[in-house]
Image (cartoon, rainbow, N blue to C red; front, side, top):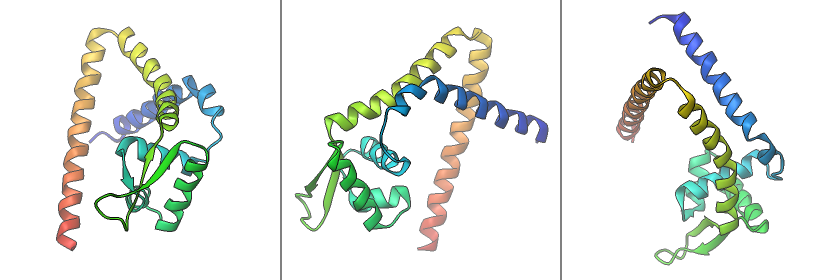
Length: 155
């Protein structure tokens, strides 16, 4: 593999993602949540109704820390807790409508900027980009499956 080409690809990826984040910076600057709280909120948005243990596992933190993060989101009206009807020992957390709206708003600005960039690209360049992203996503999926298999083998 060409190390210079890989390095250039990584540099371009960083530049593109930084530019996307800058496009949406005003919305992010208005949020009064810690990075950990934002991660917990997006975990709930992406996962729906999630046990607190699921939040902890996804964020790779302890159960008390996950519970505390969810509590802070509940206090701000961005999440709610409820008892699991199937197992009353478990507490589930899910985003409220306000939490969903906040997450949508934070993600939307970057998506709109990306869509605009893609629409403005030369069709040949866009096809090449899509082809490259498809290859990267396929590789990422393969690595995820391999990691899951290795994890099961250790159990």
